[in-house]
Length: 247
Image (tube, rainbow, N blue to C red; front, side):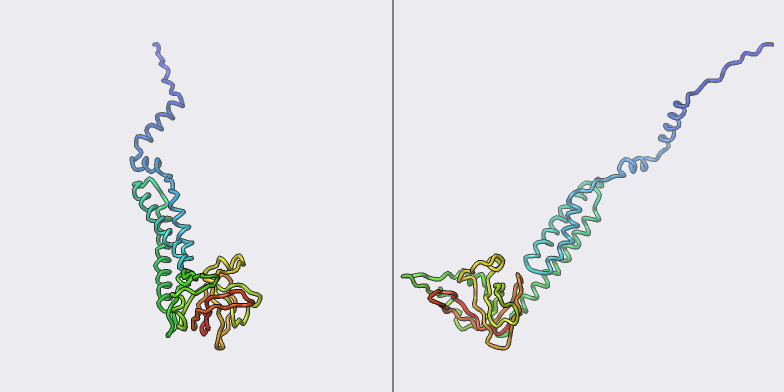
């Protein structure tokens, strides 16, 4: 009796591994496949910019010009949200963008409320607000070598006014009875002589005294005089203020 021994088929290890992988892939859920394909989602540049702008928006609480920072942050945040939501899940960073948009919105509303309230209540009773910018636009009239104050500015003679400006730096900086108030920081920063229309000679007529504040907007109130001040034959000022209030 003879036995016909047939060798068993040899299955290569590589082929077996391939079949195992195919079987594993065949039974993998479509949701898991999609998750693996899109596990990384790029973050658009507007999202981190929105967050940074939101953090910087606290500047809006310090000054009115600072409100442009949270305003720009809101615009960037809205553009970022539009970009992310329109991508239908292809972009990440939604939380970064929303936090930045939220912070910018809060500081914009809060800062606007604070500055609006301050503007409405900062003028002391009995005084009228004077815009330094408007005063600087009232150019003096020069005729026959003589300087005359503009009629519009002359019309403020003797009025009780409230005006805001910047203190011109001088040697004395404490317990000041008199100082020069400038329209902006241009002259104060670089030490140049202010234009006659860009400054007011301030002198207190009561016990009020001032401490020098560098590059800080200050508020003063008193009786306005539009009259020329000549020292040593040189015209040094067109406007003076008999100060009664400083803040």
